[in-house]
Structure formats: C-alpha cells, structure tokens
Length: 168
Image (cartoon, rainbow, N blue to C red; front, side):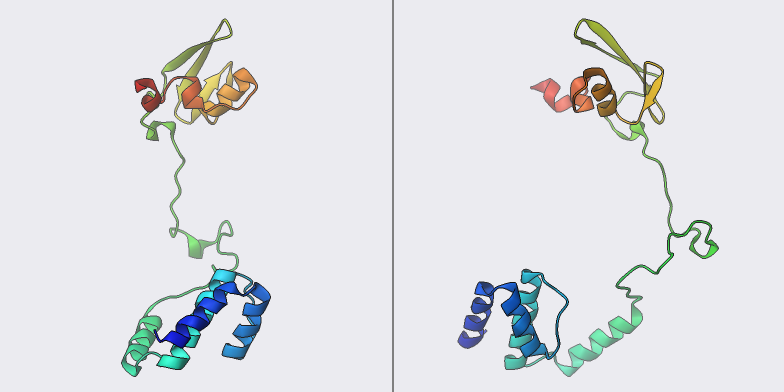
C-alpha cells in the first residue's frame, strides 16, 4: 500500500460516523444506510485502494461472476418462510427437543437427586423431558433450585453435579 493511501486510511479511523457517511457519498456517489463505523471505514478504505491501485483483474471479475451465478445467494429469508402448514417448506428443517440425557452431568431418567437444604431433604426426579419436584415438572435444574431457594442458582452447582467443582 502506498504511503498516501495509508495516510488516508488512518485518517478514516479518526473520523466520526457523520464524516464517514459524507466520505462514502464522495467516494461511491451514493448514500449509505449503514451507521456502523467499522463497516464504513473498511468499505471506504477498500474503495480508496481500488481507485488508486486498480480494481480486480478481468479474470478475477469473471470468476467471481461465475461463482455468484452458481450460488443461491439470499440477503434475507423469504417472507412467510416459517409459516405453519406450508407444504413447500416441509423437510427443510428438522427439529428435535433438548433432552436432559444429552448432558453428561445428568444421571439417567428415573434417578432421584437429593440434597439437604436448610434442614430439609430436597428430592428431584430426573425425567426424559425435565425434572419433577413436589409433583411439578420443571424444565431445568436451575428452575428447581430457584423454586427451592427463592433465588437464582446454577442447578448443577446446587445439586452438586458439576464434576469440575467436585474435584476442586
């Protein structure tokens, strides 16, 4: 990069967003919707360099065009993409529920986890989809710990299931 280009790029970092937007209009000949300083600095710096040192070669431009024509490029997802019952979207996305058994810290479903808290024994049953405490099903151990203590707790810490902390 030549010296004068480097100075111009450095001066961009000292400019505010309003100044960068003006510079963008000056260089590109159109306004930008962006108010992101980092984006504007990078985009303007690229354009300054391209104008002063030359743009892409014709060969590179053709290759980029080939790649762009070959790709299904979208800026945004189509409207109504997630509309329920839309047959054209069937099979595009697979969903599965999170199961506590996916977490290696948890025992298998059916196991009863116990802990003494303020003189009482807290018993929680591990289910396929959640945890049962006092005939109520909770989504996480943290929710159970919150119900027991009335304050926010990491459920694994509260019930002593964090292996890293057990070793310490």
